[in-house]
Length: 179
Image (cartoon, rainbow, N blue to C red; front, side, top):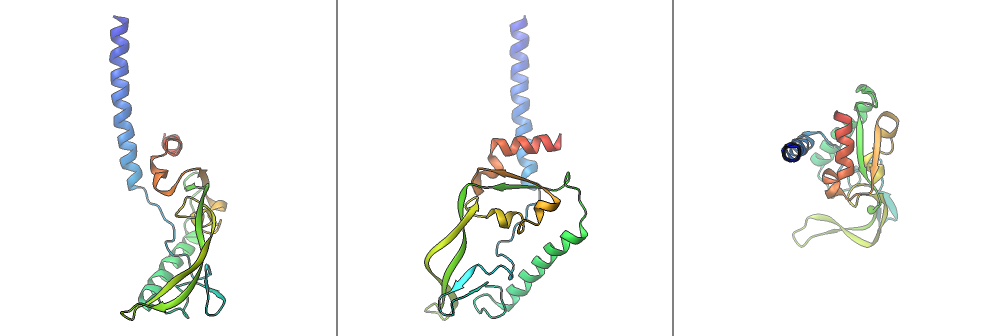
């Protein structure tokens, strides 16, 4: 009888843990996440070969990104900046999970050019510079230029961008935070 009770407990626990892990995964997919897909125009991460000047595609002087898209990007970045001033969450409520340990491209040398169809584009020249990150998002970008380090708990994990939501250590930390 004790063996049967243990077997019943193990089967129940194993099945329940699989269900709970599935629920946790589903909840994680609903949680808000935010990082700038194009850094704010103050971040001059492109060096133009023709002028030898560092710039950003969102800068007013750059012609590749349309004015409408630049305006939208400026508005989004302004909302992010304003959130630092208006949203008062304690560090126990704001958590950043960032991947580190993988070179992440952060600086490009480009040459403005046009496609055969006349569309303005940047042509990448040379080898881009890299910083630490998850292969997609640098740690500086994930923490909004380290500003989040002052108001949030920042957890760094040696994991690549597309694996962070499946990483056992990340999931364990999330589980600890929500229990």
